[in-house]
Amino acid sequence: MFVLYKLSDFCHVLHQNYHRRQPRKINWRVWLAVTAVLVIVAAAVYALRFSPYSRIKEIKVEGAQKVSSEEIINLSRQALDGRKHWIIPKDSLVFFNEQEFKDILLKQVPLIKSVDVARNISGLLSIKVQERQKAIIYCDRRQCYNIDDDGLVFEGAPAVYGGMAIALKDNSGREVKIGDQAVGPELISFIKDAQYSLNERVNLNLIYFEVSSFPAAEVDAMTVEDWKILFDSNQSAEDQVAALKLVLDEKIKDQRDELEYVDLRIENRVYYKLK
Image (cartoon, rainbow, N blue to C red):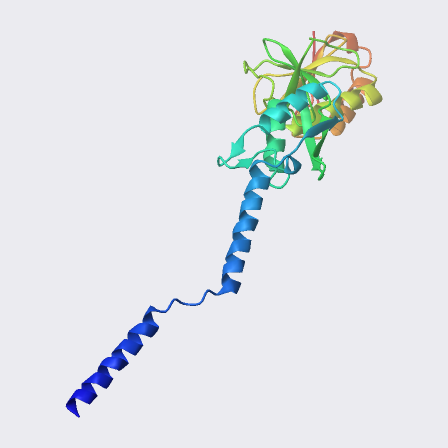
């Protein structure tokens, strides 16, 4: 009985070892799912890195007048050249960074005020630009520039004073360059309002405006009659011109050609000096 017991026990152990050594069955569903994921990832990598169908192939520019369309296209191609993180092409239709692209164009071309872009699946990138428009001519001690309503310097300009041109001479000693913010939009608005009111209400033409410091509270205007008007840019230009008209019509009507300046900087007060 002892031998039989040991033999049966030995057979049981052999039976267990046999089953342990049997290979496990393959789960084909899991294998197919993993394979499908790998194929999709490989296809995506190929599309991103190599496929021409997912790339920007053509660039079209609208709205360019002073700046050439060719310049914008060349800058665009430079911005879209290369890869991000060594993998994703910058000209990828899928991962195109619209805001980053706009910022590059606006920084490189100060003449451009705004940029709108659109792309389609055919690989066309459409760029619509709005150029800056001259508000006034700004002149420092070195040269003159055109600046827009925001006060941004966007191109050089000839030194033109008088007539329909509005010019601001900066005597503060500052030097600016293209792309700089020369003055604030509030000062631009004040100067344009003052010029318009003087022309319409007083029939008075100017040669130029000038400031001596920044921030510019005092703004002087040189008239074609060779006398100055001293404005406070923090007050209404229209109200100050109304006060000037009252003085010119009632106080110094016959002495206008003898004026040296009229000071409008103190509210409800007008001071003037004769030569």
